[in-house]
Length: 249
Image (tube, rainbow, N blue to C red; front, side, top):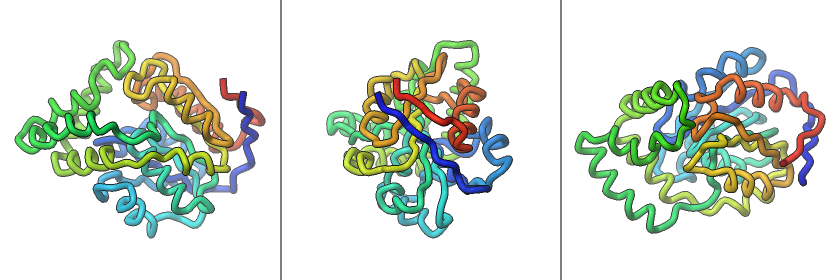
């Protein structure tokens, strides 16, 4: 069992939000109003390069001296790279549906066909392979959430699809960085996520010195959209430092 004691955040501490694979600001839209009510929010795009190192280098000039991080999926991998490069700047971090392990060579090889398909007008079919309907919780709102996923992907287009996929394929093993992260950390996972299952989220939370795990019920790979009120409440409380003690369970 791991115990996380939250420190009080600085007043009006800036928050950096990083969406995930082929996602834009709308992937955090339910949280933006609440989280931005008493602090400045900086929304970053993952599509600024084809490796985590390039993206972090591009982002660096736009980051404040001290800030909290909230990120989803691919955005979580970028957040970890920021933690590696600027550990002194990050006051607390929340990672949603994030995999710290590298892509397997077998999966990366199978994904090469998607790059060609996306470029030739089959972006939605490619997205359906990267984020299948089964990765979301089976609920009445699942089709609505998936429609938003597809619309965000269409707006970003095949060029960004290639960049995002390359970042995923080339991401390094980030365990070493995470074991050195000594800031309050919240790992958020959907109980029905088939892409980043609960055991992977537990693994991630357990390796971090101040890691805490929150499982969101009736949610899959996009808990911030599938259960927006629950995720917003967890993040709002975590960022405010109002929980005296959290337990990894």
